[in-house]
Picture (spheres, rainbow, N blue to C red):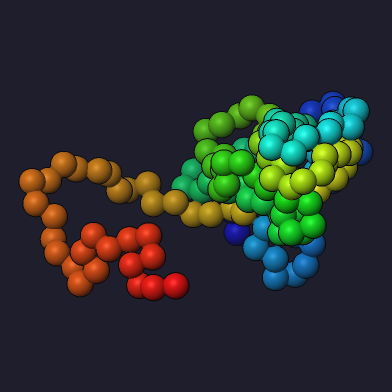
Amino acid sequence: MPSIFVKRLPHAAGLPVPQRMTVHASGCDVAAAVEDDIVISPGSRELIPTGLIFEIPQGFEVQVRPRSGLAVKHGVTVLNAPGTIDADYRGEVKVILMNLGAEPFTVKRGDRIAQLVPACIAQDVDFKEAGEISATGRGAGGFGHTGK
């Protein structure tokens, strides 16, 4: 089983590394490494530090996804979901939270703000220009072409 190594920065002292909250969970919750509370006004976004740097194995990425509880209870989501942490990135992981709710939302130190999902990627695929593309039964149908 591949490992993702985690380096904790000083401002993340005492916070957990990403962890699954149940045995079969796909995502690992990640916590906010904020020193002071951050209030996200309705319609606003904030970049929230995690205080963590990852060493992700080649052939993998880590996707940053919203937590369903924050979305349904507060209207808070990850703005660029799913975000991608590439295997060669070695900076601090930060999460862009967006408040789509009607009330201000406060992020406190240690709050679980997103979930991280490790995923295999296809690295032996490239994009090649072609004059013709093969036909399918679906064709160009998209955005609700199969009904509600």
